[in-house]
Length: 126
Image (cartoon, rainbow, N blue to C red):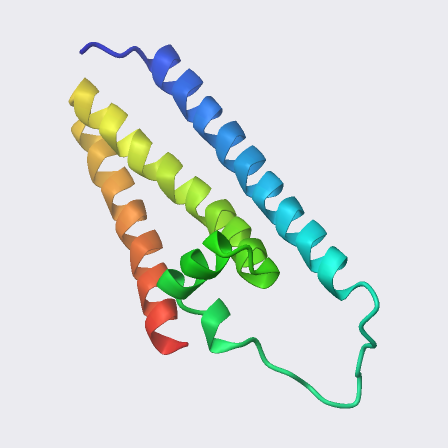
């Protein structure tokens, strides 16, 4: 399959727009569910409540989102937003591999490795 620079740019642009749009819609739906369920809750500013464990672990976030747990849906939207630029770099790597552009393959693979390392090491530390 022969891809031109222009077709790769168009695909990357579509990927970014779709990723941000999907993440925004998911987050908006989660926010709406949260407001519908908690609109009358009183806010307690005297005590700090950390985020529950269920909203910090990826499988639990996805499971909670499928059960329409509002905070999990919002977290899923945020994860999709974070995943969008990572997917862009991965797709760019694929495009450069199709073009056989070794310099950009090395640079993009390095950037992708840094992104993945920072995401994985951050997840392990939390």
